[in-house]
Each structure stands twice: as structure tokens, then as C-alpha cells.
Image 1: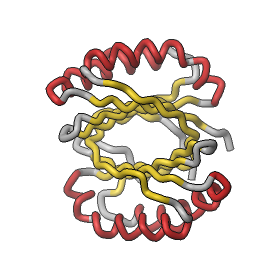
Image 2 (image 1 turned 120 degrees about the vertical axis):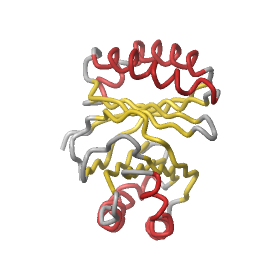
Image 3 (image 1 turned 60 degrees about the horizontal axis):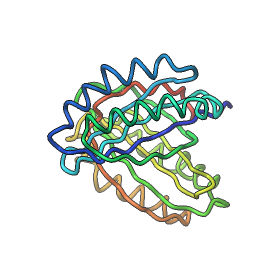
Length: 209
């Protein structure tokens, strides 16, 4: 199976500039990314309460990811000015991508960052795929789930998308229980978890489950 890669840029934005930032990403950044060889889409997550915004671009292979660094850096710097925020960049291997159906306007995401021993990472991925994913996709309103890895750093990030904030909220206890069980079994540690509005959803990564 071909490995697909991703680059995520976390923007710590000024709250009053989030909507202009979304428009800039939709009208300027997305078309520019589409023109870069190897890009297979992007998404944008927004947390209006904290100003944290995460733009993720996906790339068909590691060579494409590396070759795009220069053009993407220029796009990132311009976007940071529009958002009036600072940026942090992470690079990931996309280990799992599963969709029940495509998201529509109003969709929300629950994102969890974890730390795990790199030697235990493959077992952790198997646990997430075999123990957590089947239980999550049974939940009403479930759209999709992904798991991305930074193997050398021993980090992972999972993203669950639901049709609405209400659907996600209704499953909060169940999702917490599923996450806690897999994290405990994998010997991992939860670093952070946050819920986001899915402002842009054009991350055209193939099914990888």
C-alpha cells in the first residue's frame, strides 16, 4: 500500500481575523496548492474559542511533500499575516483514513494528540484500527476517521469527523471510553484533545483502513 503524507500548520490566530483567514485559505491557498505537483487536497479546522486553526495538506508521497516545502512556506507566511497569528508546522505519515460518508456544512472534528514509544507504534495503529475504529463508526452521525504518525518523534494524531457538533456531543462519554481503552492498551499518553469546526474539507486521501 502506498504511503500518503501530510503537513499540518497550526495557526494561533486572532479571533476577529478567523473569517477573513478562512476566505483567504479557500480562495487563495487551495487553488495554489492544487497547482503544486503531488498535492492531493487540504482541510482546515477552526476552534473559534481559542483561535487555534489547523490547515492540513496531503501529498501522494514523501518526495512530493519535501519538494513542496518552498512554495508552501510562502503560502503559510501569507496566511499567517491574514490570520494575524503565529504558526507551527508538523509533518505526518497518514496511517489510516476511513470514510463512512463525506462531510457537509456544519461538520465538526474531535482531534487527539498522543505520545507513544516508537517501538510500540505499529501495535498502537493495529489497536486503533481493530478495537477503536469499528466502535466509532457505529455511532450515529459518524463521517470519517484518520490517524497520522510522526514515527521518529513517537507522536500520533487522530481525527474523528461527525455530521454536527450535536452528534459529536451526544457521543462524548462513549468516545472518551473508547479512547481511554485503546490508549491504555497501547501504553500511550494523551497530550491534548480539542474539538473543531470543519471549515474546509478537501483532503482527498484514498481509503487506507
